[in-house]
Length: 112
Image 1 (cartoon, rainbow, N blue to C red):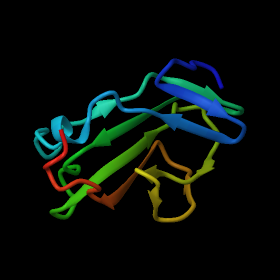
Image 2: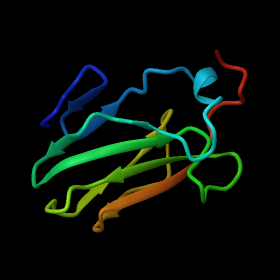
Image 3: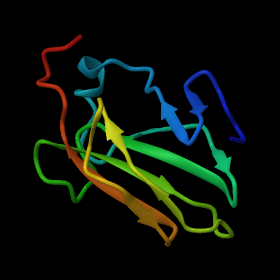
Image 4: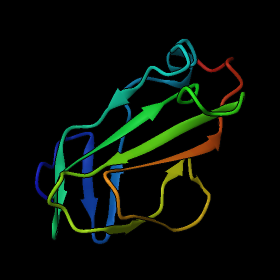
């Protein structure tokens, strides 16, 4: 992993990004607004970044958050799986510049 930080840590084939805000604060984000990870790279795929939309991207269904992966223009395709609070929707592949996945929001707005 290139670009490892305290919030972005590699553990074998797994990359974890710890968003520094709690769900209570994240639930106040407007739809379409996001937090971004530091830029990082892995073997054959440099200059990548994760985006987290706590209340979904512009096109997400109500009650869903969105996680996006953006790759640099010269990066190879990458196979991955996103987990949001331990819940995933299966393995994915990003061959283009960006992948967006929508997940049920794992909070009810009461967490602080």
